[in-house]
Amino acid sequence: MNPRTQKLLLVLAVVIVIAIVGTLLFRQIPEEVSAPLFLLVVIIEVVVAPIPGGAVGYLGAARFGFWQAWPLLYAGNVIGTILVFYLARRFGAPVFEENVAPKTRARYNRLLDHHPVLIWFVYAIPLVPVDVLSVLAGLSAMRPRRFFLIALTGYIVYTAIVASVGATLAEHIGVTDALSVIGAVFFAGIVWWLWTHSRRRASAAELAGLIEHVYRVALTGNIASGKSAVADEWARMGAHIIDADVLARRAVEPGSDCLRRIEEEFGSGIIADGALDRAALGRIVFSDEGRRRALEAIVHPEVERLRAAEEVRAAKRGRRIIVHSIPLLFETGLESTFDVIVLVDADEHVRMERLIATRSLSEAAARAMIDSQEPALAKRSRVDYIIDNNGTLDALKQQAREVWSGIVAVA
Image (cartoon, rainbow, N blue to C red; front, side):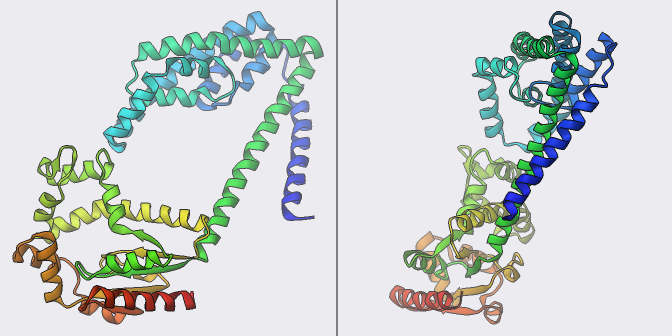
């Protein structure tokens, strides 16, 4: 018997045991449960236990009958939802606004504002935990009056369905048996959730094992060394390249949290038409080490998050060797996380000439950019391969192919 079958049988056994225990427990619910107590339990369930369909509602309907349970259920759900909405609006909305980019918040608000019928169906059909939607509405800019009109009319149908199901079960199979059935289903649902949750955790563990067997290559080089040309040649040979420069541009896209924090740090002068003005920002950071480090403290964590996510996606697609192109590999202290490190280097005067020619920079600006990085000479003794790029592009490509072949041979 394989381990997966064993787990499945174990879960089935647990479900059976819990169903039996649930039957015994729910048979002990006293007949004389008061209406106020039931109302209070419904409110508590709405606020702290967002269970699809409202298990307490089914139980109450089986005990009280449809006509008594329906108004109690409706009142309890309405009161609980109002509390959830205002708690989210009062305590959650400020945090939401502070940590979510304006563009994302605007899209989120439009989604809630433009789909009232969909929201109404969520509150009318007892299939999803509606309290989650109440929290989301509280976090959004949705007007309270509009939200309550949608939710409170939807609850008329929702609570009628719950009360009808509970009362019908009680009428046809008896109150205690109805409670037993509802309890068994409810507890089986909990076990099912625990099982799926454990499967997700197992999948995460399997993914961690997959990442562990990836051969990680770091490609680095100071500015204008030719690192990008090597990455292009490797990509042509089939390498999977994750480029930190590309991720850095993605991290500061319009509406991103990084861009918002950069604007707060450096002022609105580095923003043009809602996007980052890289030239303006460069004039600030390349001449001031403190300001450059402030920028790196904002951007680097987000780039690392994006880089890790890209690596996971590549590993899932079966990539065994993954190349990370990282200009500031040593400056950020990431060198110890790679199996092999390749440095692309060129003499300083060659890199100066390239910067001035390709970027139309002054000599002073090019010098500032070169001086902002750790000297390549200090890196040469800390790498596995060195590709010198003082010659022609063809010579560079030839070296790149030789180094890639060597990496593939040992990976």
